Length: 194
Ligand code: IMP
Image 1 (cartoon, rainbow, N blue to C red):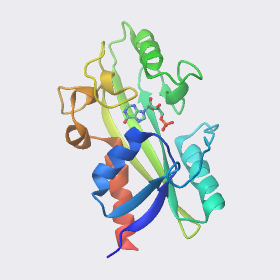
Image 2 (image 1 turned 120 degrees about the horizontal axis):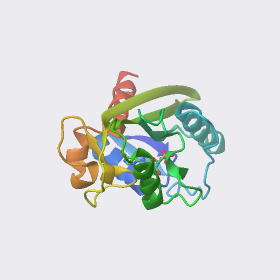
Image 3 (image 1 turned 180 degrees about the horizontal axis):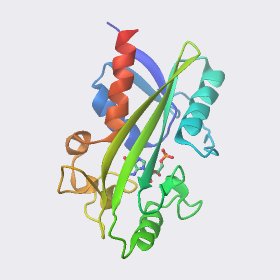
Image 4 (image 1 turned 90 degrees about the vertical axis):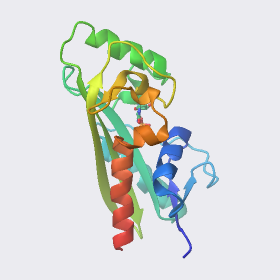
């Protein structure tokens, strides 16, 4: 059987690698760059759902090809859900992973409630019809960075049930807990049910 081809509306190579590791070749995903689309799609909304939907709708309108996008946020309890939908630009438009972590650790300094979760929303468009999938990973923010793998807030996030931060795990370790993996598995189950 030919693998199903879908455009993944991102150029974030970390996300592409993580999602490909879950798909294991059952789906042929093509990044924006590989599809010849050289464009940043804005994420101006206040919810992950609206941002994900806008990205997939924009690409579907441009290409007429089935596609999906994802938006992810880190939500902390003590900061009422911050940085949430603003996770990429928490410390400003530079989108610096380091500056974002510094800001988060500063705001949580002295805070005993370190509870946090990653939430991924995937918006899939097949034949013009949209479906949303969600994946959540509960955990906590540690006081200092640990590890060099992964991206974003991985060095300061320890998922429930683990002792290591995401950045101390390899891909298969992160996949035991990952929000992105959970959302991707729902997408795969949905495609298999069609
Ligand atoms: P976006 O989905 O590209 O808007 O991602 C928002 C930001 O959340 C990224 O810039 C990263 O800093 C962070 N982020 C998203 N997914 C992860 C993850 O799996 N681990 C750590 N940080 C992440």
